[in-house]
Length: 147
Image (cartoon, rainbow, N blue to C red; front, top):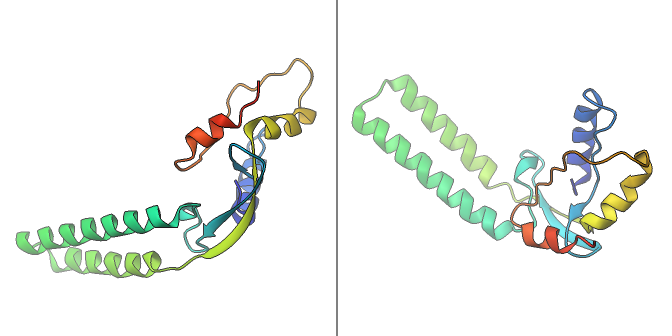
């Protein structure tokens, strides 16, 4: 997880489950270095290296919400349900307009991360599961593997 605040929350959550699970504060890439991420404090899961693709997703989400509200109006659903949908739309609109904060974050190859984490493993211990969430950077993550 490249963003410090999100990595800290993830570490705290992982601590209660397992001592052998680790969160590495870095983005996985094809080369070691740094990269700029757009961090959204009220929606950290939406943070991204690709703010333009997020803007496209936001537009699609807003369109879907509008379609659902239009359907409710046509079906003359209960006023409470319609009001709830309007509230969701208003809240979503506020969240979608959050500009975010640009953060310079560490990037590392998968090989570099594994080499650095090796100190935590015994000599004959293996990695049974490696989970990475690279938000469209799958090729870069794979290119960072040095055998």
